[in-house]
Length: 463
Image (tube, rainbow, N blue to C red; front, top):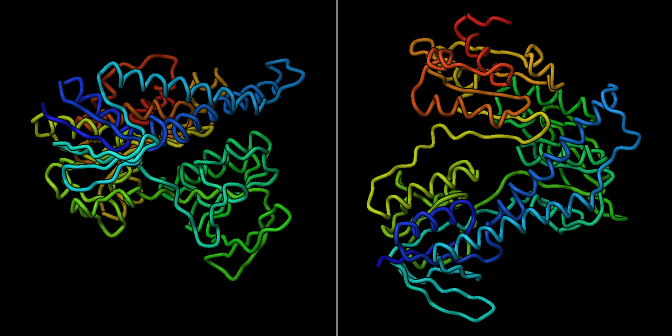
């Protein structure tokens, strides 16, 4: 029987392991901390537990101010929220471990290090042992990047992995970096009562977004009292009296500012966990940014070693890792599957949510691609009006010649769910006309997507 060793039990690692085990492969999976990796324990799941409840709180607060609800005292019990968060993590972790057991996967807790292309040394509390395998899958994930002068101390200067381990709510919070992680935590701590400043060295907030969506997001953040500072580099000057004194240096003009903060969250992205796992012993090659080099099958330069998830140079998202896991599992089982990264959707789980896939309008202009933009505002939707969630817009970018969708960009309620229609269409080469011909339920938010699609060809009813 073929034996596979998986290093890392995040979304990529555990899905590869389960898929292989269900097909009769003997699987060991090694995890240095807790089952589920970063996503389950300190990333996707715990932050969404926070964001969903904070968003609900904000929604109820707004409706109370409008006189729809009568609530004399409304607030968030932070300790209760943290307890709920911990319970969810524990339940999902236990469920994952039961899944391993049910599928006869040998789950080993310890640090793994490649000794060769077929052997791995595992060090755990029970000692050290060497495990042999026919195939090895590296799914060791990533860790937060730091920035000069802001060294992590897990107290005053923190990362997204440990910000909730700090016992008190900061009165003033500086977030360095305005990607999805930075924006999501800005929304959480703003709702909990912190004064939040978001600093971004690049030209605009959340620079990976379509410019129009970024501008919409900035208006939403400012409306809620969050200070945003694009075009500003941040530098820690000193720590004193449990405060961080930071300097903001303009990247476009001769301007410097200072501010004092009770806590600083560094949210400038993540770097792959490729150090100290013995890649050099097996001859596995890295690129210039320390990501593991893989081919379209997710195979490294060593034919029996594969890599998936954040250690590969693709968008560092849980669903990227899960999709790559399926590709690798099928290849190990003898199929010839390839990973196609063209239509990976991304989301910022704020309030409102932001979701996007494909090209931005700026990219299309830069490459001289003929396109038509279709847009529709949530405020013109009957469902949005009825629910009171009218903030946002859907923007569809259509190829003029083929009528295929080149990009989809949504800011508004349920954006993370609404984007899936666009992802399916782009993946399957469907045209705008194909989607328009499908019936959308009334009244739903999906009609906002429909109207944006119709606007691409000048047929929108409510524009």
